[in-house]
Image (cartoon, rainbow, N blue to C red):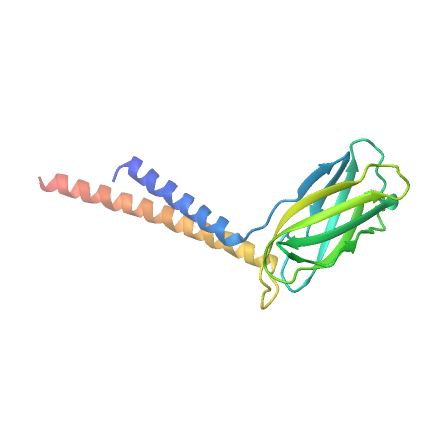
Length: 189
């Protein structure tokens, strides 16, 4: 077996393991930043941006103002989840005590799994900023029989590492066997 063939097998094994790990880890999304009328808001859904159906879901919004006029305490901010004709109850944002001017939370309840749009709207109570509306995509998963733990992702990565090492070891051993077989064949001739 040539060095090139060994390398090809190793690369194939690594790519295959990474593909399996990326599919298995889940559909976590990065935090989503939106901007409208000079107001920016980033959505985070604790703990890992994977909301579950039939459970209270906490939404965290971090705000910034490109024009410097936005103040959360002067915002009538509302959030709703929409999936086709299905809507969650509209909820007001609650300013977080530690950072009242930039961070707020809301809790909503997704009735069923599927793709939702989380719609955040805000109007100023003192005309200090222009009204805004932002839409965030969210994939809501079916409820789990038991809560996910952070350890499941680590376990998948560990198993992937073991598989990669096993493939590498197999490739090295197979290469040595092939080399020894070639030497034995050459000696017989």
